[in-house]
Image (cartoon, rainbow, N blue to C red; front, side):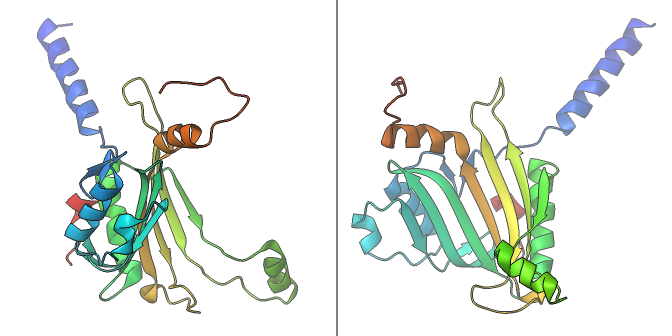
Length: 221
């Protein structure tokens, strides 16, 4: 085969592989995983969240705040998890100005553009097995409680962190509705590897060997 054609074919293959390379959620709200408590509170404040003064003096592993915007959308709740004072997970629950189901589809589309096709999807349910059985015995339909689409980014030779991401659509807490246009949308980010690493430091296993150790802004997701 002509050497020039071989080189051209190799370039085409390389450009195709590059085009199919997707990002990983190495940061969230402008923060890298492992950010300190004060960095988290500062980032939330810059996003417009209302930060109670008590959160600055607290050492609780969870930070919850309201208000502000994420990806151009109104946030009704921020939920942040810290382990050993470092950021390991963050979620933003948003209320759409018009339709929750439309916002869910738009965010899911933007996430897929940036991070690739989702690796899973499931129906959400807060019903216990007994409650489900009671509905089935009564011949009643199990109510629609939402949907969750998820992405997993396992560690590999190039990337050492194991990360997860999900986009969920569910009815507001304590609101009995199956109207998806009224549902809230939550985007959750987490560094599973950092969480496990820090948790092992904070809660060591006694038997283990110690180790050292408004339009949607898709670009914000």
